[in-house]
Image (cartoon, rainbow, N blue to C red; front, side):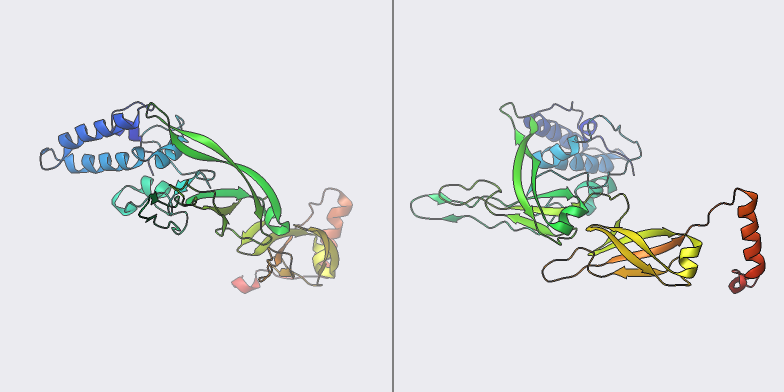
Amino acid sequence: MKFKDYYQTLDLKKDASQDEIKRAYRKLARKLHPDVNKSHDAEEKFKELGEAYEVLQDPEKRAAYDKFGSNWQAGQDFEPPPNWDAGFEFSGGGFTQADASQFSDFFESLFGKSSGSSHARPGYHTHAAFHARGQDVHAKIVINLEDSYLGAQKTITLSRPVIDQNGHVGTSPHTITLSVPKGIIEGQQIRLEGQGGHGAGQAGNGDLFLEIAFAPHRIFTMDKRDILLSLPVTPWEAALGATVSVPTLGGIVGLKIPPGSQTGKKLRLKGRGLSSTTQSGHQYVTLAIITPEPVTDAQKKIYEQMAQLMPTNPRSGLGV
């Protein structure tokens, strides 16, 4: 996938105002419209122009796009970093109401997926004045697995897109404090009432919906509520059985390895996953037998004795 320089497409500098973006789009749209321009690539260029304008005319999408800064050039191979959109506030149900399929893969990878269902509710009128409830706002936040396992109080700072008096797009910090519920999983949302867009008249503010994502963990991976761990064991622990220490999000616990275990055997630590008040998660430990390298003559002799005393062909199932 190639990076698209939307400013280059509109022949603008990156500090262009919103009014300059509108004027540039209108000028180029008249020039490139397929009904006027009969060149063979007019339709493709007109489509690219519409995609660039869809992003840059929207302060929310533009602020998120600008996050990449000058680190990328048009045409470079590009892959969005994991959770690149974390910390940005978007109104309504997500990044865009546009049909992302009409644009490039680059656009769809950044803005094509909504960050959540729209919870916006319409305003209302009275005879005396106009009142409109503030718009609901969505953002993604990245937390640690430990925050979900134990529950946590967190203070985080989001970026809220703003337009200054000169029409330039920037971001304003929005610091919030929230309680992370015990057992919340990736993709679920936390609702903060009244912390969305400001209401008009006497109507209340909208709500802020925070979608949860997990930061990569040094040793654990996730499968919804379940914690997964690959556990190295010695050949004698696997062959003879043993009780070994295993890390969990709640601390070190003892795990009994049955005699005769093989690499790939999966053992369960009940309730050691992401458990809420209504649903339980577990930790699954997959054994990986690590064979020590013989260095001394005495160590090599032990392996030779094992070969004589316990002859086996682990490849018999392959027909060899």
